[in-house]
Amino acid sequence: MLTIIKRLLQGVLVIFLVLTVTFFLLRLIPGDPARLIAGNAEESVVQELREEMGLTKPVLVQYKDYMLSLFTGNMGFSYFAKNDVAYVIANSYKPTLVMISIALPSAIIVGLLIGLLCAVFRETPFDRILTSIAVLFQSMPNYWVAIMLIQIVGVKLGWFPASGYKDPSHAILPALVLGLPLTGVFARSIRTNLIGAMQQDFSKAAKARGVPYLNVLMGYSFRDTLVGFLTLVASQLGFMMGNCLLIENIFAYPGLGLQTLNAILRRDYFLVQGLVALLAAVFIAINTLVDISYMYLDPRIRKAQGGL
Amino acid sequence: MTEKAVNTKKGSNFATGFKSFMNFCRKNPTFTIGFVFMLVIAFIAVFAKQLAPNDPYLNTPKIMLMKPFFDSQYPLGTDTLGRCLLSRMMYGLNISFTVGVTAVVLAVALGILIGIISGMDYPGPFDTLLMRVVDVQMGFPFIVLVIIFVSLLGSSVPALIGVLALSFWAPYARNVRGSVMIEKNMDYISAARLMGAGNGRIAVRYLGRNVVPGVLPMVPMDLSAAIVLESLLSYMGLGVQPPEISLGNIMGDGKNYIATHWWITAMAGIVIVLVAIALTLIGDALHKQFDPKLRN
Image 1 (cartoon, rainbow over the protein chains, first blue to last red):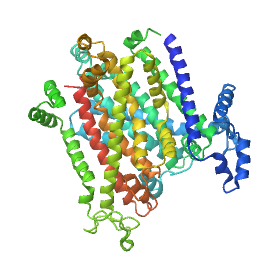
Image 2 (image 1 turned 90 degrees about the vertical axis):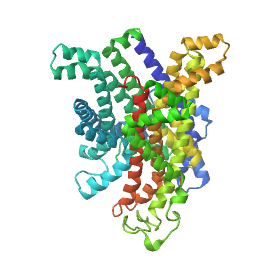
Image 3 (image 1 turned 90 degrees about the horizontal axis):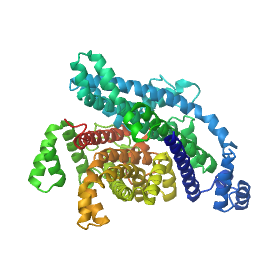
Image 4 (image 1 turned 45 degrees about the vertical axis):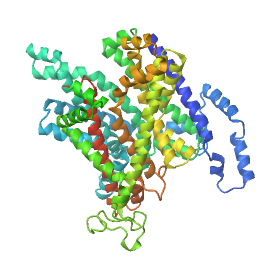
C-alpha cells in the first residue's frame, strides 16, 4: 500500500514538473497567440488583445495564476476554441479513444497469435515468413504507411473513409496504422520469450511428468512470458500516444492528437498545457498500474518492493 | 562463444577480433544481411557526391515527373522540377545519416554520462534530481517536445540533431544507472578503491567498461528511430529545409502529387523501410549476444 501511495505522489510531482517545463517552454517560443488571432491588425489593437488575454503580466505572475487556478479545477481557456480547456478535451477525446480501443486489443491479439505460432513452429519456413512480416510491420515508418493506405485503400479502392471522423468506420485506417508496428513488436517479443521459456527446466520437467503438450505450452511456458509482455505493452503506450498525434494529423482525424498539434502551432497556451498534462497523467497512471499488477503477478517483485 | 565475444569487444588483437566477428556473422545470418546492407547504404551515403549520376539540384522542367525504370540517365525518374530522384535520394541519405548518427552518438554519450553520475551518487541528491529529469523526459509525449524545440531553435540541421539527441538519451541514462548501482558494490570496485582509484578513474576505467556493452544493443534500434523521426520532421516541414535534401523532404515534395505520381513518396519510403529493417536485424543479433538469458 505504501509503495502505491509513494508512486502516486511521485506521479503528481512529475506531472507538476512536466507542466512547469511546458509552461515556460511555450512562452519561450517566438510568436504569440494575440498576434495570431488579430492577423494583420495594427500593433495597438494586438496590444489591447494581449492585455485582455493576460499576456502582458510578468511570466512568473502568469505561472502563479495558472497553478492556483489549477488547484480550483480550472484548466484555463482556449483562445481559438473560445471555450474552456476542459470542454475542448471532453469534446475531442472520443475519436482518439475509439482509435486506440480498436488498435491496441487487435495488436495484442494478433501479435500474441503470431508470436505463439512462430514459437511453436520455430525455425520452419512458416516461422521465418511470419517473423519477417513482423519485422516489416515494425520497421515501416507509420506516416508513410498512412499516406500509402490513404492512397490505396481510401482513395483507389474506397473501402474505408480516409479522413475526418463521423462514425467508428473512420477510425479503421488510423487504427490500422497505429496497430501494425505494435503487432510486429508484440509478435517478436512473444516469440523470443516463449522460445526461451520452452527451453527452461520447468517446461521440460512438466513435459517429463507427462503433462500434455498444449498444457505445457499454455500453462507453463506461455504463463512465464506474461510479466515481460505486460512491461512491453506499457512501454509501447508512451510511443503510441506520440504516434496518435502524427496519425491524427495525417488523417485529419479530430481527436486529442490533432488538437495538441494545432494548439502548439497556434500557441494556444492553456490548451497545450492541459493536453500535455493529460497525456503525462495517462502515461504515469498506466505505468503505476503496471507496477502494481507486477506485484500481483510476480511474487519475487512483491517481496523486493516490501509487499503490497 | 562467450570468450570470443569478449575478444571482439576489446579488439585487443585485430586478427582474433576479426575472426570472432566472422564467426558471429556465420552464426547470425540475419545479422550479416543487415550489416552488409548497412555497409552498402553507408557507402552510398558517404560518397553520394561521387556516386550520384546527376546534379540533384538541377531543374530540368522538360523532363519533369518522369516514370522510374524508363530512362538510363534517370533510373528512378524525376520529380516535379525534373530533378533526378536517384541522385536526390543519395544526397538525402547523406543528410539523413549525418543527422541520425550524430544525434544517437550524442544521446548515448549523454545517457551514459548521466547514468554513471546518477548511479554512483545513488541514493544522493544528484541521483534523485537526475532521475526526476529522466521521468519528466520519459513522461513527456516526445513529439510535443520535438515540435516545441524545433519552433524554439528553428529548423536547421544542428537544431535537428540536438532535438533528436534530447529525445533519445533518457533510456540510456536509466539503463546505465541500473547497472552502475549493481556494479559499484562489486569486489573489483572495492579493490580499485583500496588501490587508491578516485571516483573519476573508477567511473571511466572500471564502471564505464562494464556498463557500456549493456546499452549497445539499443543503439541500432535508436539509430533507425532517429532516421525515421528525421524523415518525419522533414516531411512535415519542420526538419531539414529545402534546398537541402533529406529522404523526408523527397516524400514531402511527392505528397502533393501523390494521387497521380505515388512512386516518388513510395520509393523514398521504401529506402527508409529497408534501412530500418537492416538496423532491426543488427539490433536483434546484438540483443541475443549481450543478453545471457537469450543466448543458446
